[in-house]
Amino acid sequence: MDTESDEEAQRAHMASTVLLAQRARLTSSLRDSPYDLVLYIERGAVHSELGYPDLAAGDAYRALLLTDE
Image: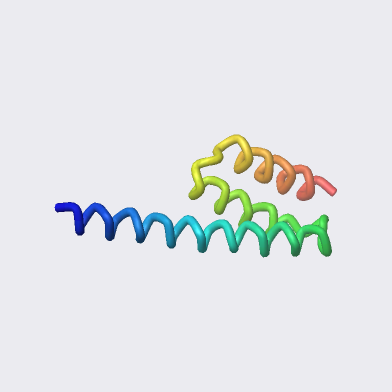
């Protein structure tokens, strides 16, 4: 049983690490292209996967504002 829970914890940690790397990449891209609404949507999805619904909503709102311009 411990082996299974250790493997699950390791998989969760790896998934979290991948998501954090994606978030860092998207944030860096947004510094270069702050008016790219797709980047905000993609980063919002990553925030949602990481369990940060408030940050996901913020990015979705920014993307929505950019559609009005």
